Length: 173
Image (tube, rainbow, N blue to C red; front, top):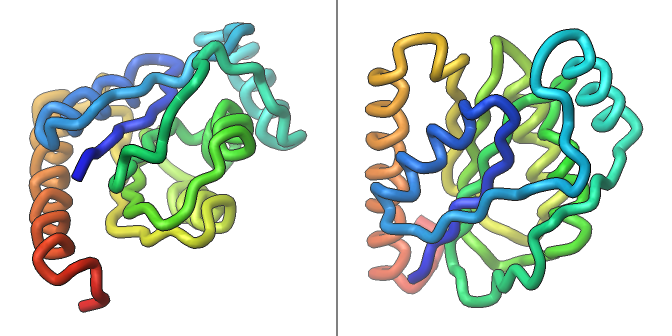
């Protein structure tokens, strides 16, 4: 059962958590990269990031030929922009439709929008089984080590679910 951790990170928070989760799960790691970079600081960061999600923009990704068929489990990580997932996921979801996967979600935020973000992912990725979700508030600014440990513990719980699913043949509990 192969696992892929897909993430987009503007300031490094989501990347930090994604790397911890991927290491714990012995998963492959895919960082979504956009052709045109978003501003990563100051007022422009909020204006451009917010505008891109509100208008459901599809920023061009530089990632090519991502093969999701070989993965049974996909962990998705995003910063929260204007109450939802980052705009590069608009493109990812459109280009790489997938179904029948076990999907876990994590988000990094400054204190809000998590429930809406996860709900929107579930709506955008129907026909998948969502097996976990967690959020981290500014993990690089707050207690970095505690955030890393929280990510590792969550990943361990996901790993336990993978074992259970494999033992019961992916039947519902």
